[in-house]
Length: 120
Image (spheres, rainbow, N blue to C red):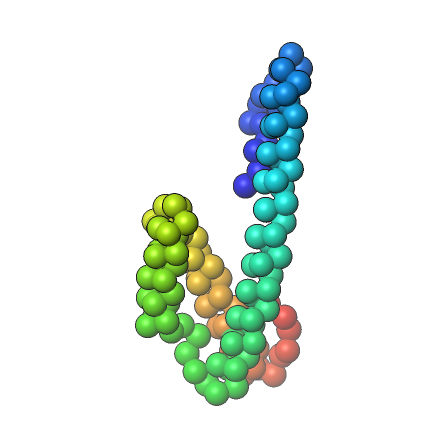
C-alpha cells in the first residue's frame, strides 16, 4: 500500500528538486499514517467479528450469512461511489475480508465443538 520503489535506483531522490523531494516525503508520510490507521481499523473490525463468531458458535448459527453479505457489499459499493473510489475495488476488498471472517467463524465453531478456545 505504500509507495516503495520496485528497483534499487527507483527510490533515489538524488538530483530531484528540493521542493519536489519535500512534497514527496510529506505525501509518503501521509500514506504511511493512513496505512497504519487502516491496519488498526481492520484489527478493530476483526475483534467485533470474532465476538460475532463466538455468538454464532454458541447458538449453532451458520458461519456465513449471504443476505447480510449482499447487503454489506451493496452498502460498501454505494459508499465507495460517494467517496470517488472504484466500487468494483471496494467490493473486491470487502469480499476478501468476508472470506477471512467466515474462515474465522468456521474455526471458532470447530473449536467450540472440540472444546478448544484458541484465538484465530
